[in-house]
Image 1 (cartoon, one colour):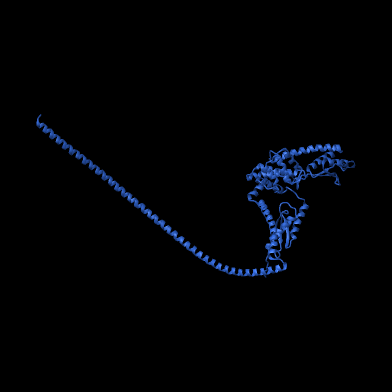
Image 2 (image 1 turned 120 degrees about the vertical axis):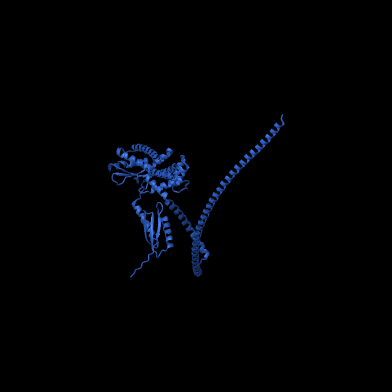
Length: 508
């Protein structure tokens, strides 16, 4: 090939390489300029943003400083006020301390005077003690032993009475809720007032019937009394005879039988026995029905038939004019209401209240109180132990073991104490009131005595020149003690001694 062609190719290659080098260098420099411009733009933007952030930070810092200065000023103001208040309190405390120091000085002076008087009194006491020992011919130790023995004996009695009185008052007063519960229970039961006492007087169609009742040589009346187990009193009462018997059921059987005999007119021993037998069956049926009906009315279930029969006997039993079966039903209803309100066991409370006086239906020949007899009777027939305890403890003859026993006792007291529940003979009531006032007036220093609240409180006004405050307390205790020893009364009697001193003068 031609050498010139190679030279031209080499030159062309060199020129191409140089052109490529300069073109790439140009492209590199152009790219560098673009990158530098872009970096400068970013730096300017960052510088501007930093300047804005710095301005905002300065504003925020200024606000924080201003807020801190305002808060600091407020705190300084509060501190100044607190310092003023503390300064005033310090001044008051200084004044008070000064007054206390003055008072302490006065008390020290008074104490020294009291100490001197005490020394004088102690010396006088020693002199009087020596004179008393010479007069009584007893040493101080002997007199102290006798006095302590007497004081201990009296204090023990007073302590027991005061404890019993406090417990009774706490039980009676209670809280407002207890009083409200009792009032609500009485209003919800709303029983009728006092029932009439079962009459033992048998009316006769005419006076001739008395002779037929007595019979020839007293044959009919003896046969009737022997068969019925009662006493028939034939006296001057016009057209009536009286039946007397401790057993209210036997008295009722005899009354019904004698009434039938007087209506029938056939009065002889054989017919008397037949009529008594018929009336005994009729009364037994009435007793069973009365017991079942009373349990139904009281809402008491699950009792043994023998217990219901015994409860039915209370239909013919009264206490202060209050029918005992109606009383049992009323007590059960009251106990149920109280137990429900207090969250106690309603069934046990109602059973205990319903059966609490079942012992009164027992034969009077059985020994023991009605509460103990009733509890033993119910225990034999599988009554719940808590119910048995409620029956036995409603007169505190045994200890109460449950709140239901307390509820039964409270319901019994409510039923017996509500207005119209029981009655008392007017003559006996007036006699008791007068006895209470006369007893209080018999004490020395008493000016007047008044029995109030139906004899449940005696208010005594004493002569202030004869009875001082300490003696008033002792007088109240002595009168209460004498009432306990000499009188029979239900519940408790409050003794209030009033001592009043009046100073009167006239302006002329």
